[in-house]
Image (cartoon, rainbow, N blue to C red; front, top):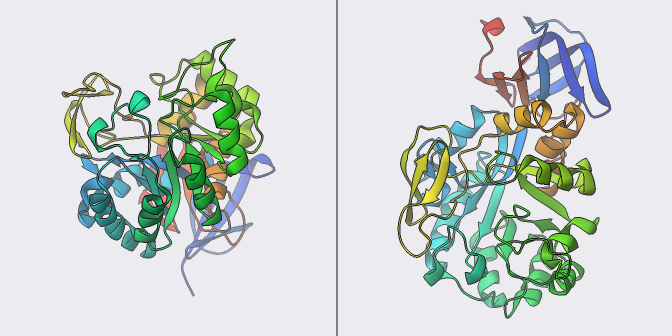
Length: 384
């Protein structure tokens, strides 16, 4: 029989709400609620939440998921696990199709091995007017045949693709993705309100880092933001690092969409979990100063280049600065992205039979423990 670990005395964020002084039983890699015999860890004064799920992350720990190096990709995953992200979809950046196919071959193996939850292709089918940190010379229109090549290269592990639906072939590509069971995400787009509505009707269901890399909200030309916020079929990604979004804008989006339609993401690049310096983002170099990543040179120099955020900090910021309740923060950081990635049958909430993916936080909401599939990634002091 597998060893059991008993986590006692903590507040626990269950789907029905936060429960005080609850005992969790970890039986092997899975969860059970209630008392049992085993090694007891007293977590009185702590909060246990589900492991975080990041559906949009490019790198961390000095490495990148675009490297096509499995060891480097594992280093990225380990960095984010140590910050509470127990499941993640590896995000690529714009490159030529052959390079992206090579990256997909490596990443798909890691998905099949259970190290990653899927692949998110961000680019190359995005707007040159809103490309941000993506190399303009590598962008292309979303020809459905090219979209199909990338989906096929991922061998069933592609979970999401970000594209600009206003480009030639955009709507047909959205339909192709939806029919293939891959999330069509609207992002890095110069789309109008009406064109965005068309894309939603064609099957798009996610807004990639809402507000960033798209036209701003205007009272006469509402653009994509209004269309994405108002439609209940759309889940909006938000980067809660205090740099990408002003707190009042994040609060507006969270209140309007509701907790059930928000996914907090990192959009992290290689500097996540690291100090300031120079880091790769795909084929580009990024300068990080004071924790803010910007393209170092070339035609997009100075553009914000992803973030250095980790999801433990996004959670703490949500509940201590943004005024978001614990239950709502858990929805945005765990339950919603798990559902979108199709892994909510095994993770994203604390329920019997699901994977023992847990984050332990102290009274200040600082991370002190991480468990993934029943194994401590970060062992809290109480666990010895």
